[in-house]
Image (cartoon, rainbow, N blue to C red; front, side):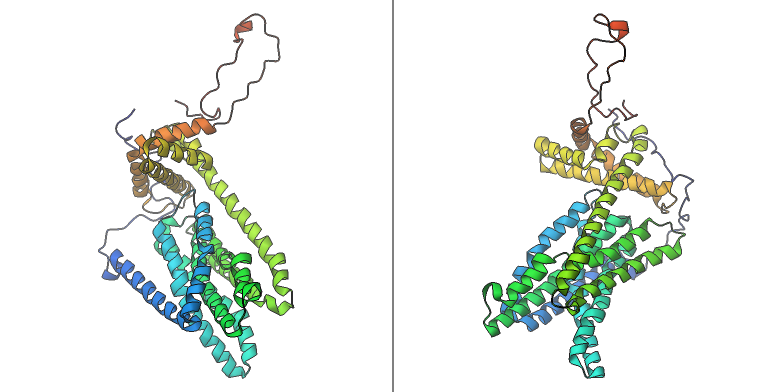
Length: 452
C-alpha cells in the first residue's frame, strides 16, 4: 500500500483550464476589520441573542408565564422530528451543524421578531386607516403576514447562500437550510399560539379535548407541523437552482430565488386565507393543495438525492485511476446503504471515533465529486485547485480507517453477477475448455472498470 499521496490529482485543474468557469484570483489583500471572521460571528451572535431576549419577553408578555411554559413544552414536540427529517435528506453531503444552528436560531429569534413587529404595525395602521379592525385582521393574515414572514425567513437562506457558498451547492442544500429556518420560526409561533390558547382556556374554563389548547395543538402540531417548512422550502429550491446555474446566467441566478419566494408567499397566503372559504375551507385547502404539494416536494428532494449519488459514482472514478481512492470506493460512496454499512463496520471493529472518521471521509469524498462536477460544467470557482487539494488531503489522512470499512461495504452490497449457460452442450468434465463449475463471483460489481 502506498504510504504517501499521489503527486498530482486528476484533474489537477478544472477541465478546460485553470480559469474555467471563474476569473483568475487576484493579488491578496488585507481584509478590512468588518470582513474579519470573528467580527462577523460576534455581530451575528449578538444580533440573534438580542432578538431572542426580545422575542422571549414579547411572547411571555402575551401568554403569561404559565402559558409560555405550556406553549414551550408542546411546541418542542415536532422540532426533533423535523430536524431529523431535514438532516436525513442532507446525508449525501451533510452540511456543517453551525449552519443549521444559525438557521434555526434566525427563524426562532430574528425572523419571528421581525414578523411580530411588522405584522402588528401593519395591522394597526390598516385598522386606523380603514376604521375597520375586523377587515384589518383578515388582510393582515392573508396578505401582510405571508409577505413579511417569508421575506424574514428567506433572509437566512440568502445569508447562507452568500457567506457559506461552499456549503450551498444545490437544491438539497436549499431545502435543508430553508426547512430548518422555517422550523425555528414555527417553533416560536407555536409557543405564542399554544400559550395564548392555554390562557383562553384558563379564562373560559375549557378542558380536555373540547379546549382551545387541544384544538390548536391538533391543527398546528398534529396536522400541519410541516406548513411553514413547506412554504419556505419553495424559496430554498429557488436558491438551490440558482446555485446550480452558471455564473454568466445573471438573470436566472436572481429570478429563481425571487420566483421561489413569490411561490412561498402565495402558498402561505392561501393557507392563511383558507378560513375564508367556508366552514370546511381549511380541510379543503389541506387536502387539495397542502398534501399533494408536500408529496410532490418529497418526491423531488428524494429524486435529487438519488441524482447526487449518481454524480458521486460518475465523478470519483477519476480519482481512483489517479490512486487517491481504491477501485471500489466510487461504487460504495455512491450508495447510501453501503455508506451506512461502512460506518457500522467501523463502529463495530474500531469504536465510535472510527465511525465518525468514516462519516467525515464520506462527506469529503462527496464534496470532491460535486467540486469536480462543477468544474467539468464550467462552474468551478477560482479556488478550485486549492479546494480540490484540501479535500484530497482530508481523504488521504483518513484512508487507513475508511478504506477497510468501504471495502467491506462494497463486498456486501455488490449486486450478484449473473451466470449465463452456454447455448451449446458441454461434453466431459471440461467441455471445449469451459470449466464444469462456474468461476466464483467477483467481490465487486462486474461493471467497475477500475478493478486492480
